[in-house]
Image (cartoon, helix red, strand yellow):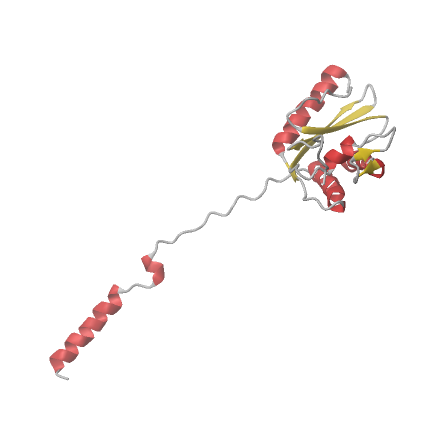
Amino acid sequence: MSLVHYTILVALLVISANAVSPPEKLKPKQTVPASPPPPTISATAKAFTDAHNKARAMVGVSPLVWSQTLEAAANRLARYQRNQKKCEFASLNPGKYGANQLWAKGLAVTPTLAVETWVKEKPFYDYKSDKCAPNHTCGVYKQVVWRDSKELGCAQAMCTKESTVLTICFYNPPGNIIGQKPY
């Protein structure tokens, strides 16, 4: 091969090598934004969520996630009941959300105790017939484990003068739909 051909060949190789850039130079560096971490919830919110999800796991339905929107709605209602109604039961029907409430006098009510109280209805619920035993109610239990509910938000209000605690939980979407079983 002549020296001219050799020089041209080397020059073409150098030009070719410079024309092809490594992949990182061909594409701009892109970073995929990390999805924001889930909002941090309070210890009380975690206790409500954990107690609900324990009951739901026992019947094989997916866990609920805490909703700050539902928490705010439950908080508004609980505060209204405390400030205007002396912690009386709230009127919950009809409502945008499913709801449970617990009224207790002279007793400290933890989130776990509130949910466990609702779940105590379970032995009176007959899944096969979708009915509750005579002289018992099962609606609050069924709402805790309602398979289509995905979000939860709860609040408590304490009326010291009356020595009462009112606990309210909201669920979205609501449960207890007539003609449907909870799970």
